[in-house]
Image 1 (cartoon, rainbow, N blue to C red):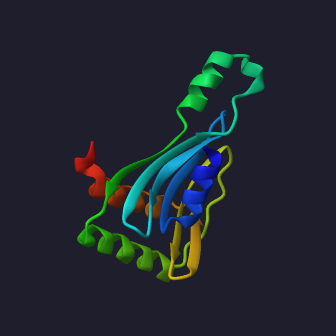
Image 2 (cartoon, rainbow, N blue to C red):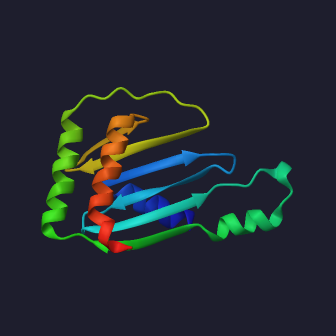
Length: 136
């Protein structure tokens, strides 16, 4: 599962993600060039000190890469506009320990990652919510 998720993350044009916690879990939403929208989650490990193999198994069984939607042309244009806006702006990454979040873009051969900037992360989450709100 990890390889599938990592491959999809590399190919995504927009990756809005978070990571952290004692189990080092990461997850988020990916938007692909083919207009597909995926959610993903991956638990890297369970704290050895917990000694709870049942919980470890439960967390690992929650790992997933799931296609949730195909965007319309209009929705995809909103995503591209958002990506182009990110590429134009200068952001200063914020240092955070134990957890974090980022917005990564990959458009027309240009890659950019912005780490732990609340305003951008919240704007990205709002965009994704607006695109997927009728998908539940």
